[in-house]
Image (tube, rainbow, N blue to C red; front, top):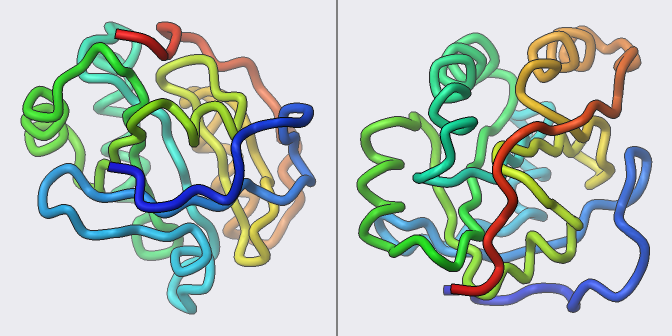
Length: 173
């Protein structure tokens, strides 16, 4: 379902302060295309919270409630987007899981090209991207709340990088 990706990942992993790799992916529910540049250009949003997710990972199951609470708390200030890059999960399973558990769009990363571009390794793994397309936070869900509180208050994120704990992204079926 990848509509377009800027380029295959060929360099070092993007880090906080680097430009986020661009993408254009379809939503699993309606097939609508979401483009990073359009999401970051949204004048009503201070950032894009890109979360790599899985419908089978027990760590993602534990993160559903905290992500839901953060989406409620910050949904008027930032745009949440889920990405499923696991090649061993069916579109129907992803669609069903997303509808039941997430109040934000879920995108399908066929071939894990976007996961590769971000060098994402785990689910859940989070990237916060500012309106200029720069990564401001990379890490786990546990540290996302404090990072968003600081970021949306106009402060520097005191812990911009944190380890993401979870299942590995399954790149081959």
